[in-house]
Length: 134
Image (cartoon, rainbow, N blue to C red):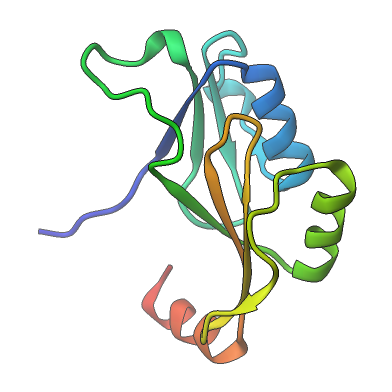
């Protein structure tokens, strides 16, 4: 059975701060007609699975509320510049830039403590990814 990842959701206590972080620091774009600024903000990048910021109050009963159990990966054009921008802005940068074999990356945290893996993949990996359709 074919499967498509449709959405990654992050439950947030401060939607305003999280929206600002993901739009201003990461570069995602709000899709207004799919968003309700008080409880659900639909964000998209230039490609890949969209991200939804959801108010913590909408978390389903029984869903764990712990932070730090997920890592969201983003590929960026200029990893060095983003790393320096994060450091200058006081974003929690967890690792230095390192080689992961498929390219360079570093790990940081968003305003609510969720882990982010920011990477710049090498040409061979990007070409392979394009051939596979993701």
